[in-house]
Length: 437
Image (cartoon, rainbow, N blue to C red; front, side, top):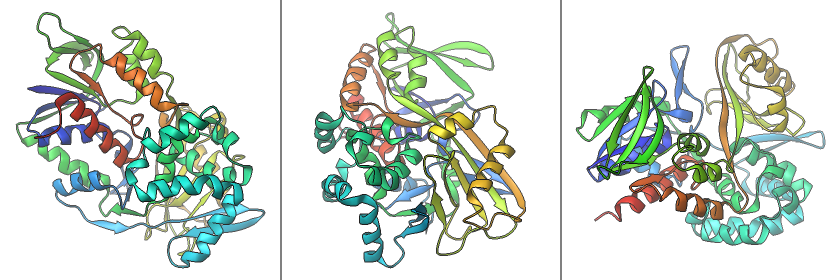
């Protein structure tokens, strides 16, 4: 049996890993010149740095099993340390000591209404981590009851500004009035976890994964943009069309799995499954710009390593790249003001200067020379899902079933975290191939 996976980001890599465990022959198609997608790395002064998916939760069990199979790389502590401006005062929340004091701070930021509404959700996730994903049993019930509201209509302003928005604008690129209660569990689960990061970054893991291509069951086909998916009536196989070095071609497979973001899959299915394409376009994505900047001197102190900014700024958050990288700064631009300020045509130097202007009152940035930087703008970088998302997915997968032997997974299925992508990929493989023997 031969299977094609379309998309070499984390969802495609996860799907490939599940299939390789079944000894299935896989061709992994990636339109860019290297796999990795939004978790890809770039060189910064001879060091590989990661733009996304850098923080690995304690409860990322599927991903940690995958990492172990790729050579068991070292992890290092990352922790949780973030600050925000509240009524003119800088409030820092950290999991590094002062546990009860910080819990009291969190509760004060939530307010009574926030505690009343979010505590049952948090308890459901802590009691059963399987509930902290899109479409879980618990959050389906929340969606059915409350998704006629956005988060802005569900939570009071204090909780929105200081708890909900810092999470949604970072994970979804969306404001609370663009997100829904039934999807918030996938965000809340991340806030309830603790984190490490790979000591040598995602690049080392992707390199180890590429080394698996030496096995007969995996071929990585980079620079190939898939343009169509359909059933071949003469052979009963699934046929894909793709473009490589400007030349169109086709290939047939026993099974095909898309690991593309919803909007990219919609474009591929436009002619074959127009109704599925229309449904996929109802899933919202928002842009994000990320800059990683190396400064001559340390920017952060040990006690305050990150800060989130309110809805009046295009900079959503700024933070140290790692707990010991206090001279290496990650700037993230997302949210409504960012969309009206920054575009794919914005010059990286100007975007970084804007971030420095906003963050410099709180960190040692002014008169601290830049040594180097790297920058990415992703027009469809962060997925914000939809109202009653689980019902929309049911309609989408019903339409996708019109192509026999075809399945789809991605950041819109169980959530955008690395672990959610691995879980979604596992479910997709089991749907097409059955439970493993």
